[in-house]
Amino acid sequence: MRAIAIDAMGGDLAPDEVVKGVAAVSLQTDIQCVLVGDERRIQELLERAEYNPEHIDIHPAGEVIGMAEDPKQAVKDKRDASILVAARLVAEGRADALVSAGNTGAAVLACARHFNVIPGIRKTALASVYPRQTEYPGQDHLALLLDVGATIRCEALELVQFAIMGSAYAKRVSKVASPRVALLNMGSEPNKGSPELVQAHRVLQSLSGLNFIGNIEGNDLVKGKADVIVCEGLVGNVALKLLEGTAEVMMYVAGAAAGESWRFRLGMRMMAGGVDRLRELADYTTYGGAPILGFENIFIKAHGRSPARAVANAVKVAAKAARDGVPEEIAAGVAAMR
Image (cartoon, rainbow, N blue to C red):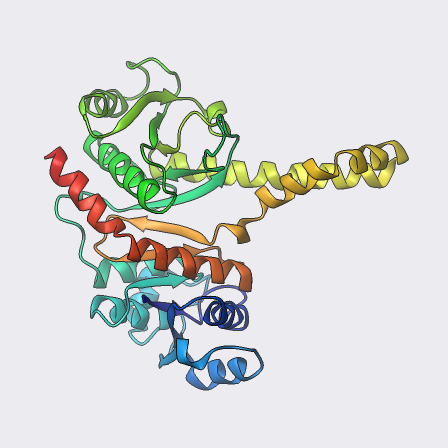
C-alpha cells in the first residue's frame, strides 16, 4: 500500500479539483493519500465530497507558490510552501512519491533540493506521454518523449542516460517488455545532427540491454516506430507543444466545419467513432501526468489545468511507478552502462 504526497495547493484549479481527485482515488483504490496544504480549506472540501477517510491524511503547509511566480525566488522565500513540504515528506520516507499540478519550475527545484539523484545520473529529465498511432495489436497508444523542458542543451552522455531512463519507465509503467528507443534528429542517418547526437547514436547502438532503433524525424513522432523518443529539452518542449496544439486545432476545425454545413454535420455523424477517439487521445486528463526521471524518488507533474480526473490519474501513475520500482530499474540500467 503506497503513500502518495499530493500538493493540494498547486495548479490553476487547486485546491478544489485536487481534493476532488484525491477523494475519488480514496474510493477506487487502496492508495494512501497525503494532501499537503491549507488544512482547514482541504477539510472543508473533503466534507463536500464522498471519500474514504481511512485512505486520506492531511499535512499542513502555510504557504503556496503561484503558477506565475519566479520559481527560484519563491522556493527561496517560501520554505513552508505546499510543494516543498510535500517533497520533504517523500525525502523523509513518510510518502513514496510526489504529485503536483503546480508551478513546474518550483516543483523541479523542490525535488532537486530534497531528493537524491540516482548515482551516475548527470541530469534529470522531464518526460511526457502523448498519443500516437500504433503499428501492431497491443502496442501502447502512448509514447514517451524526454526531455521536454528540464534541460536546454545536453551532452551525448546525458542523451544516452535519458534513453536508459525512458526505457526503464516504459518497461515498468507501460509494461512494454522491450521498448523501442529512438533519437529525435533531422535525418535517419547515423551521422546526422550535432556532434552530440552523432556520439549519442554511436553509444546507444553499442548498448546490448537497450532496444535502440536509431534516429527518427519529426514526422515520425505520431507514428508507432518508437516507444521512447530522446531529445534535448528545448527541442522536446517545442515538439510537445506542437503536438498538443495540433490536436486542439483538429478538434476546433472539425467543430467549426460541422457548424457551417449540413454536409459536414452528416460526415461527422458517419465518423462519430473516429471523432470520439480523436477527442479521447487529445484529452490530457486521461494520462495523469509526466514523470521527472533521474531522482531516487518518484515525482509526477500533472498539467497545470488538471481537473479532478487528471489529478486522480496522476496519483495512480505515481503509485504504480513507486510500486514497480522505476528508480531501481533506472539505477540498474545506469550501472550496467558504466
